[in-house]
Image (cartoon, rainbow, N blue to C red; front, side):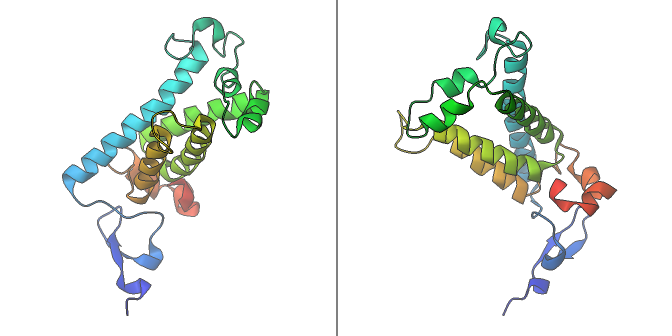
Length: 189
């Protein structure tokens, strides 16, 4: 019989850690594996942070300057007003609401920066997954696949990054994990 004490992992400092002492994830030991998880984390972080910047300043990609948040536009109204699937009334009712705009923009910026820096990856993965599942729900019905789109793929990658300590390579995850704040509140890892 395998007991939790018999299952171990490598800690942030290279020490062996029994499963019952592990916090939120297993380390990837392969050098190329660590590199590609770190790169995936940074790229996915840029997807979130770029969406924040474009909606804030209207850089002309998804948001025109006249519709930017700093010019009085709503970062949620265009997308949520266009929802016409099974959850249309739910999402349409949120469109343009100040609380939804603020929550969405804080989420995009926070998730993006956490992933780019490699700190708070667990929390970024959880909140990012919630945001992505809501965006997936707003996309229903799908036009190119019965149920799958990039929102669900990104959500699975985010959760995977949290479980493999994706912030430890090409990021500040290891020093962040040693901080007093994260030791007291491990979900911030």
